[in-house]
Image 1: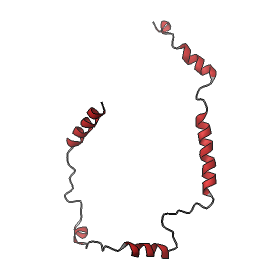
Image 2 (image 1 turned 90 degrees about the vertical axis):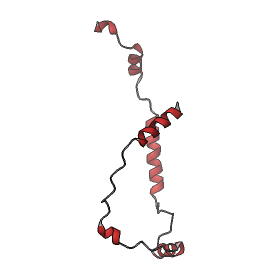
Image 3 (image 1 turned 180 degrees about the horizontal axis):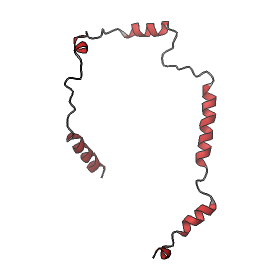
Image 4 (image 1 turned 90 degrees about the horizontal axis):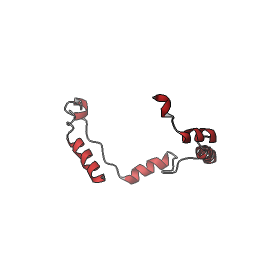
Length: 100
């Protein structure tokens, strides 16, 4: 079943027309030089000189508040969606005799 779905999606994707990309890049962009490749050490040194530690976002005090909010949302989602009366009404079903 999955293989058939993947095959169908692949076939649909293969049948789509290619987008018109000609003329999308302006003359100014075409004439621009390629960017210079810079060693990673240079980039890391620049980032460190700006005072930012790479890969370590500042969570000063925000984590406990976010944790409490997420725990509250989780408790709310665990609550039953229907009360007992609604569940009993749903279990009774629909009386189709009244529709005829």
